[in-house]
Length: 213
Image 1 (cartoon, rainbow, N blue to C red):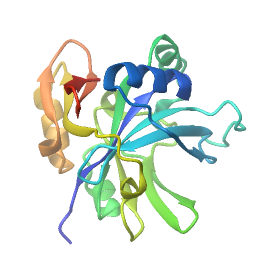
Image 2 (cartoon, helix red, strand yellow):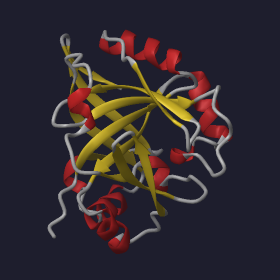
Image 3 (cartoon, rainbow, N blue to C red):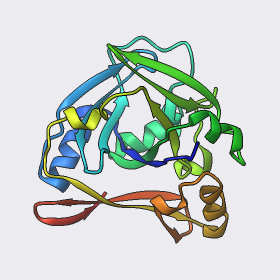
Image 4 (spheres, helix red, strand yellow):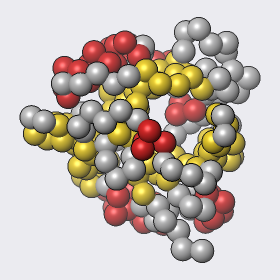
């Protein structure tokens, strides 16, 4: 089977959904609607499509949810990460859709964690999550997701006129990051730049032009 990897969604981390919604409204001029709760992870989100069967997600810990019996995804239990989100919502992580998650994990040059299955209604999806919830290379290595057969979830989301143009990954050793992403089959999905600290940014087009998150 030939791997078919594409950007599935981009993640904005926030202390609360309201904080994230307000921040994106200032930047993008739209209000992302609240969407789903992730009971197994103790998080909830807001979502909107950004073209090419992908979406943007505001993600935060759900204060009404019980503490999950395992580490939350995307390193969200990390006190330093939580402190960053309290200061301001931020471009945080990216998720790549694949048609063969087992092959991605089996052939990865780095530890990618275990495959966890989630269900909501008639749909299910599989995601790789390290047991401690950590993210490789400060979140610059994407998480991979494999959806059950059916239309991509973004096709049922309210279109707010947003289009993802570029995922920008900044790393002190761009060549190292390039080799890792190349081995995972996703180096073509992002722009890699050199910088003192690892960081991620998203360029999104709205009605006013291209905005950087």
